[in-house]
Image 1 (cartoon, rainbow, N blue to C red):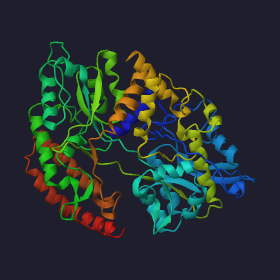
Image 2 (spheres, one colour):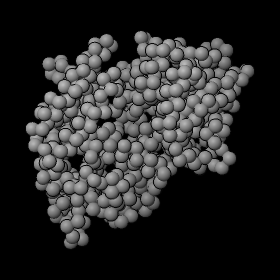
Image 3 (tube, rainbow, N blue to C red):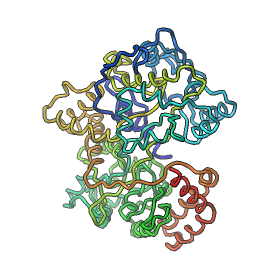
Image 4 (spheres, one colour):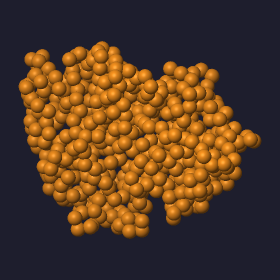
Length: 560
């Protein structure tokens, strides 16, 4: 997936902590894209229960926890340290007297999933693993999992509980419940991965244009950028709106999600229509209307004609070389877009929460609340030790414990080298940090701020003082401050799906259905198929599995 490619690239070139790629560092680099974290609750203990029975209670006798996990791609641990033997691991072990013994660690995701599947099939799993939804449900059905309901209530730290509690109606933690029992701790996906409209403001200024709001205004600006030589080089070399052949992807770069959303179309998601019927967003009349808009733009040369054959790197090259000045991408695109300044120091990217619909809303679909699950084997002798490990890890990841601030100091070693690579954060973690940046700029200091955010604040302060003079600082500021601030814009209107996850028929037929959908959409957009091909697609989609899936989702929703 192209989104994974950009995230991997960002991890490779920028030390920015727990980033959108989920593999940043510690020691002042311990939070951002998918793990930006903020306020730390006071962790006071007022009861008289034994210390060992508290969230951070250290065991008198060594407790051993067996672990199976995916490794860290491109790990930058210093020579001599490994995933199975490093300072983060020792930090957790020393604080709790818990010894972590690796059953296995497999770096490649497919190979890891094969290892997990084999362990489940042989009923020979370690004490704790991170698994996907299907693996979790398979283990639950086979009654292989420990009930963590009471363990979580007693041992989860206030911070961990606050993370889960920040998601309305317990919608994340509930994904780990089956028949009322908490059988897994899910990861959390924060708000804000939807696409913003990133646009070259210096081009707007040159052409005496104002930032757009409606889709019609967006189209007019694309046309101006394509035809009126905004870069002033007297060459017809600027491209229109950049595109991506995946068409629609949560967190995707260059995809067309906002064009669908402004037409009240939400492909790849499940909703109830005005009559209460369950519908698939890719099959609605509104989606057909959005495809017409894209088709007309492509025919008018307003969408990059070569988007079907371009790789992510090609699009990034168009940005950095100054040939592209408008595109859709998430807030963390700021890191990639900052490259344009290397070619032209006057390049000035701004993000906007547009296009807006007739009611002034930028409609968005929130990310799937969770997708990975930390499960504990019911045979584990100390399931509470796993929860304690998670507590300690996040005191380290967020640099709450002063001792953790010295681990791999200034080396940017990835947080995933902690034993439990479960990603947790507040739902509104991006928005929570914006007032911190605002105040730091006002006071012109990062003094007194939590350690986890100081490096990012320093980047914002440095860029605020001398804009674009330090490119890493500019990139951090453009993403964490400028881009992230727009994710909380008042125009944002969340459209919540009624169902996440996979049904039995999705697992069997989903790949073919997705292939049919994507190919049809691309043919319509590029004009190689008539717009009425959409109606044929809907009929075929229903006949080859869509109706079965719709029925399964209706049953699942009714059974909640």
